[in-house]
Image (tube, rainbow, N blue to C red):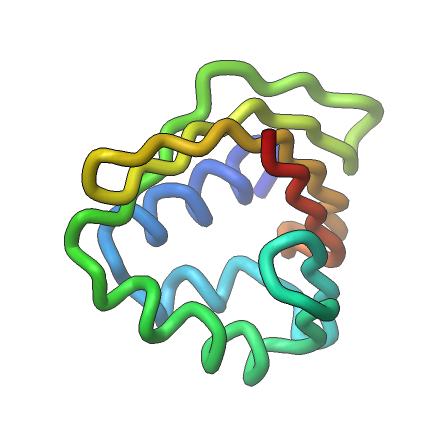
Amino acid sequence: MTAVETVTAQLDAFNAHNLDDFVATYAPDAIVTGVATRPIVGREELRDFYEPRLANPELNCTIDTIVQFGERWLVAREFVHNGGTVTETIATFDVIDGLIARASMLKA
């Protein structure tokens, strides 16, 4: 999968509230920053963090812009919807061999 395809699959799984497919888009030792008070490391921590969030049927995300740098790096402008609240986020992704190795979220 290309980097864009991987991030799109991650977004689709997030919006479908499919925890297994969401976690599967990340490398086993992936690092995610900007969503918790400390970095999330690895699939098990991702699963633990996102399981209660994806149980919320009002949570979804849209991406209106993706910019790709080289074959691995993406920057996306996301809008996270949760009930009546929308949070603009700038997300960076480092995708290696079809899996997200690093992701960082900067919330507006």
